[in-house]
Length: 183
Length: 302
Length: 122
Image (tube, rainbow over all chains, first blue to last red; front, side, top):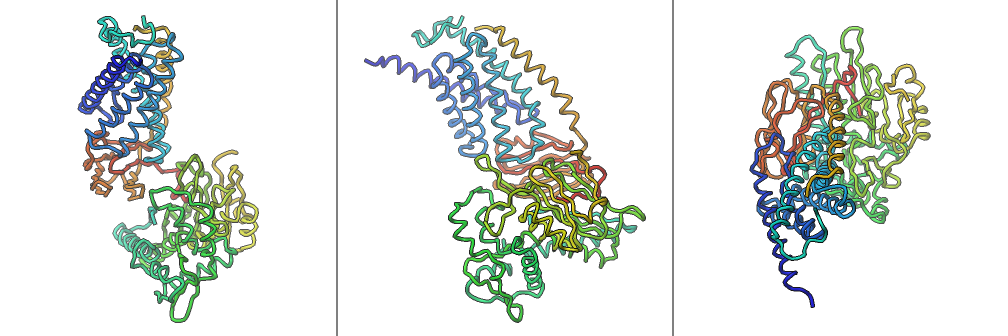
């Protein structure tokens, strides 16, 4: 017998994380920033939580749904902006998943989040170069973007670390959804 | 034409210079209309629409342009051909949709590319022999615009000027008494650098390069210089710079030499007394025609 | 979860690489001469940064206004949703780019005063 309670719970958690992700994504749009190409990427926290608490597949689902719902909310569905966040988000989730699976002993979510942020930035810049701005000068800006994505990646990682601890301590999830021991 | 034209004038009277450059830009604009096939009303569009059917009467200017283009094609033995239009359209370089056409489509349309099938008839009537043929002035229009622009400047008493249309340029006079115009040739790999320089001496310089217009699809770079014989990208070179009296001629010949390749191309340049040139091959080798040695200076040391 | 030794090493490496790349960024900064405007992947024009002016260009969404003032240039008005391009602010160094991605307008500062050439062909 399939444990349907378990499945239902999983769906509920995914929904919660998607909701959280979309809210964070929306909040982020309201924060004024010196350059529009620099983003905090705080919605990535939800992806990180999904990765740790639910698994790789679920993390991808949360990312996809966040991009989809976010784009519908902002009316950018299927626009270049949408494509960029889709590719950036998915590649970042994949990279984080890979590092999380293979190097869990070396990095906490801080390191994982940093790798994700780098992946996101690099993929977006390359796509922008190929499809929108065909100028090599764009790559001079890469160190700047990478620096900011490192800073935001670290901050997001710290927040995610704390949240995961909280979730475990408070036994919010209750069931043995956690796949590993994280202490 | 999708190009920026740039006029540099050395003239004592600013007002006079401004008036002259305004007139020159007007002339360039007029030629852009004359030679383009974007507008459904243009003469070129009409000729193309009547391909395989009727002879269409055109203006004397366009008739002469066609005559000259055909002469160039004969001289270059078909490596330059304004009837490339039918194939050029397949590659959609002007368009945002980047499609690589199927080989069988190219082969099917190749018979439409042949300058011998442009029939210049009496009273400035032009007929394309086969339906579907398309004239595309892409490889000479810029050069012609530069020539005409310079003529206008001269008419308005400008003796010292450069008219630069990106890939095609013509200079008259000098920068200041005793100081010649210095012309740079763009580096094919580093677009914000010059690879060589030479003095502008009342002549035209045109460069065709694989870096000027291209798109990337599935990791392969497709540039805009097509071989009229194969309908595919001409291979083996990065850029060809040709020096001649007229920019239109230099423009067409730069394209032709690019298609011919290093060996044939340089042989051709040497066989034409009115042409000089520099070829930069895909592996970065520079081949200079004999008349240019000592005139051209290279700025990178390899 | 708490910070690990791996995290710390990673952060140290990332910061070091970033700090090292800063001189490189400034080294390539040159005052621009012109601004090149492109819309929908087509060249619109090249304008001198010395002359203050307003340039309007048409993209798929509508008109984007570009302002040149005192050797700097910016996207002043655009019909896009997030106004990301406007927030990018003024640019003036050679090679710097501002873009309205939704309206497909790109402005690029060029510093083409190449090796004292009067003109460059190619």
